Length: 160
Ligand code: THU
Image (cartoon, rainbow, N blue to C red; front, side, top):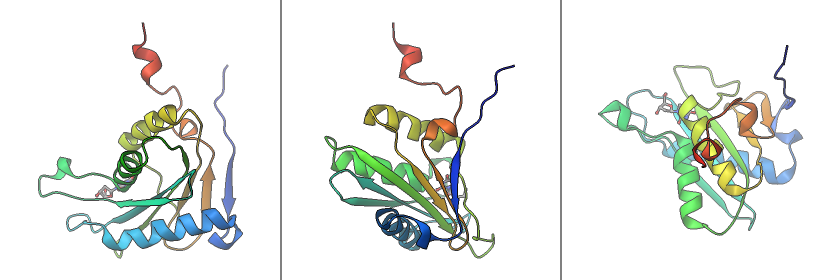
């Protein structure tokens, strides 16, 4: 029977990451402070590292009409692609803060964000890692969104 397996890295703390990823995770953690999350009180921050060295941040922006809200990863990625449409993405970090829910472990991207990140990766023509962590605690690094979205639907399915 076919089996889907993937490898991921788990670090005990941010200090064990390479310096550029440490800086990226710090940017994601700082971005949580700007989240507009008056309904869930779940403050998510994200930071995208471009090949040119720039870091673009984003955060969740909720709406009184709940489904209108947007997640942090999509805010950051849309902003990064809009600002640097010719450049490639090197990595993305995602973190969160919440007084209601413990933030001592990573929260993984929601299904809609996985689909969105997958398209960004295809557009990027190169896989990029996801660095996931809570406010404190272990940091998980996943090499490609495709590991979190097996059997994904993408542009390949719409080609003639
Ligand atoms: N959220 C994100 O920003 N990213 C995720 O991957 C999971 C969920 C946001 C959406 C909503 O504003 C809040 O977290 C609670 O679901």
